[in-house]
Image: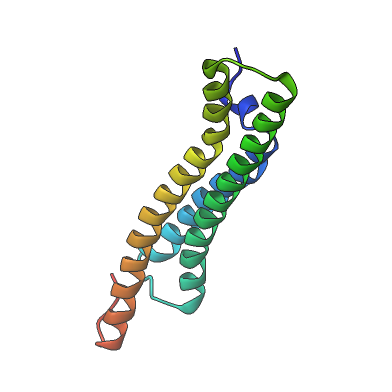
Length: 134
């Protein structure tokens, strides 16, 4: 039985990098924005925006993996001649795994980005009103 890790092929590396980057940048941004005395500086905003960038990179990598996977499956089917529909859809299913994983990473990074962006904007708004950041 082929595992998900093996089924992703070479595209697993950019997807894994993206996942680790999203988790690490989200944790760093949480630390910077939710610590006592935090304030909405531009450096924190850059880290928050990087979360969304890496989510988008994961989605683009996933789509690239799907396109390459479908091309490879089509070449194998062409070389084999007549194949069963189960084999055809099995190849397409494997090719779609990278897009599904990229979309899942983008979903998580979008939620994290929204929450962190909201916190950053609240800190900036509090500073412009002369309030002390919580």
